Image 1 (tube, one colour):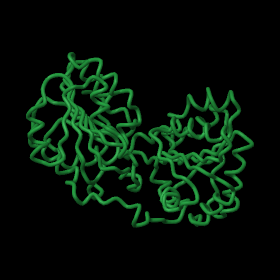
Image 2 (cartoon, helix red, strand yellow):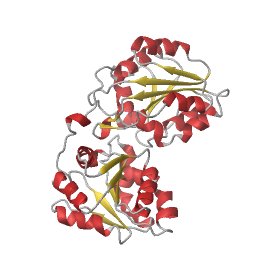
Image 3 (cartoon, helix red, strand yellow):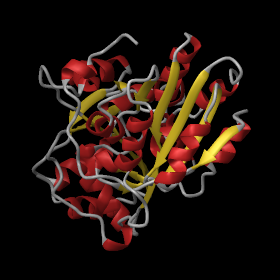
Length: 352
């Protein structure tokens, strides 16, 4: 296992300036160390494609970036790699976590790349190098090589020593209700009704399984940022849909919202954004999205039925007001303790 502090200190000594990141639990310790350290800038990116393009811009402007994403996120970077990095010969290190999969596990989003990640890297025209776990110097050398050759470094579980976020970088959401409390209200209001709920990947879907047992739920295990577009498809097919999303999910593929706005008079779709300011399932890091006007973006996308509901009574009242068409609800909340993942028998559903 690498000493995370020593690794980041060595990155700084090697003049690395920015880490462009979409968080992954395998990388949470290095992410936390960088957030705690003023010597290198942590850049949380809306998607892996954004991380890749931004790193390219930094490199072209004379900076020294490092990209950190998880294996499924590497697919989001495909167009950037094949139509920007390769043809323009732009090289910088990319650290990609390799998520494993055990047969029968409900984390089905990792199943394909658990064995096919090397093939994907090869298809992109890159070499792969598993980041050394025993020597900081060797690991840094592997990172440095990526400036000279087309190489992607693979991050395995347990590579970095434990690092907690410093007190000043931890979120204080004590003034807000836990998301589970709002989910319980949804369960009460829509018990046994003909409404399809779609839960975005991560803790939202897990908590829906625990706290919404009486509603018709689809639990999205992966495809982060795709819950709303999935719901749009179901709504266009005639379903009444409520999508339970989150702040990080909202920005990953935000174009889905503008597509929804095109059909406001044709579909029955409600989009609830639960904003807990954090990537809870990957270590609780701040999403750094306080600058975003969620309601303003929804209105600009032609969604006129918009609501803010940050307490349970108001949330219940808003639910009674949503009507046919498209509705957008923004809810500020805190997060719960870890909840169990939905079992395979419910996650593997592929028909609405």
